[in-house]
Amino acid sequence: MSRRGKKAAPAPGAARPTVTVCRGCCCGTPAKVPRLDHAAQLTDLRTSLADVAIVRRTDCLDACERANVIVIQPSAEGRKAGGRPVWLGQVNDSDAANDITAWVKNGGPGLANPPGILDLYTFNPSRRVRHELDE
Image (cartoon, rainbow, N blue to C red):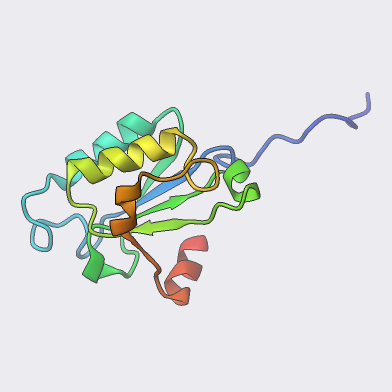
């Protein structure tokens, strides 16, 4: 039987946005960001986005001065539509996490406009740091 005309299965996770949550030397630590339950923030993101995104934890995104850092990478569809990774810093309250969750549920980068308040959290990391995340 010919395999022509059948679409190849997408790479795992390619159909979903990826939410990378920094939890290294500064992000995710009470010494740097007190008054935040860091474990609960990560758990809440994983729970609320389980059906629409991949949520992963990483040790350090090398933007410690902006702790807590979260990067939203577009889905394959979002990237085709022009979406690029969005870096958010100082995500240290539940309102910011809720805004991120709502945006990702609506499609994330390339497919939905982020809530305007997230402009206050957005920053551009160095080229070296961006490259390391892509690896």
